[in-house]
Structures are given as structure tokens and as C-alpha cells.
Length: 257
Image (spheres, rainbow, N blue to C red):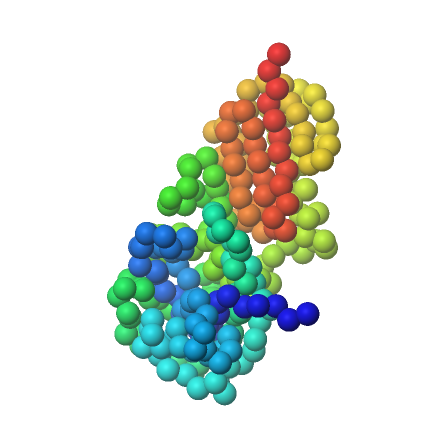
């Protein structure tokens, strides 16, 4: 069954010893769920676009001043899901383009405030990844991210580039990776003196004793740790919630008597 595509993005990839990809930092706008974030050039599909590839090429030219022919498209990558805080998820078509060099950009300032050719060696270096808070969301929520010019590369674009480069969990199915990390969090709490009241049931476990927030954050958000198996880690004194790579959730609750 055909899937309706809501948006498309262009991944411009330079090859050779200094491989890189083009990212833009979106302008901050009210109502834009990706306001101020790093992203690939792209956007919503217009009724005038012949297909999703047309959308990607049009947005690339509008946002970055780069015009590429359709024939330069190297591959249509698997459709991806862009999640929003409200409203339904968007289906996004990513298209890969090979370019010989890092092309100059002329940004449409209403859409993008900066652009960078990100070296792939940065993304491939595990020590550059960590779980961290991100702008606009509560400070107890930690997401896998890379610091890029003082702003985090996180969320949809982070997941898309990670999947393209094969940085996801090696376990199959991916839910296993999330569960194993949730188990490590639970074991860490028990080693810190908390008592297990109820083991995993419907992805929920219960413990007694106050959750040591600072110790958990220090242990599980260090550079290079757990970024492959966590989409979000929420750490509060009364509970820890972990969202795994397949967006399944595990929760450890503190139960007082």
C-alpha cells in the first residue's frame, strides 16, 4: 500500500577522505516544532510538487540556493517518521545526493540562520555523542545529541543521520537494546541501596528509596554511553523513564510507604 509522504529532505554528501554532509540551522519561528534545530535542507510537500524528490530539490534551492538536477540523486532512503509534540507524526522521504565538493550556500534567512558542512568523522566518533538536555524541553529529559557550534544536533535529524551511517543498536530487534539499558539503570539503583519491590511487568518496575538523580545522570549521560539504545531518558526523584530506539518505554517508579 502506498504511503502518503508529508515532507522530504536532501542529504548532500561529499565523498573522499574528508566526507561531510550539509546541515542547516532552522530559523526560530512560533509554531514550528523544529524551530532553531539543525536539520537537512527540506520541508513540507507542496501540491505543486510532482513528487517527493521534487519537494527535496525545491526546498534545497529555496533554503540554500543550491540547484541540483534530479539525475544527481544517488538513492532514495527508507521513509522516516518525524515526531512532533502535538499533532500526528510526519512521513518524511530522505534523498541522498553525492556532490564532488562542499558547495557554497545562499541561505533564505526566513528559513535558515546558518549552514555547516559537518565532517562525517564527527558523527562516527562515539565520544562526540552523549545524552543531554535540549532547548525548549524540561531539564530532566536527556536526548542523544552531538554538540555542533554550541547547539545540539538531536531529534529527527540526529536519528536519520545515525540510521544512514549504521550507528543504531546492533541487537535485533532494537527493543532488546532499550530493555538492556533499562535493566542496567535498575541494577545501578539496586547497587546504590534501593530495594526492588516489583520486577518488570508491562515494562514497569518499582523500587523503594529515593532515586539518586545526580548519580544516575552522571552514570548514564557520559560521552559515548548509551546513545545507541536510548531515544530519551527522563530522570526525576520519583521515577525514571527510558524511551528505547523503537520508541518503546520503560519506567522505574519509586514507591514510598
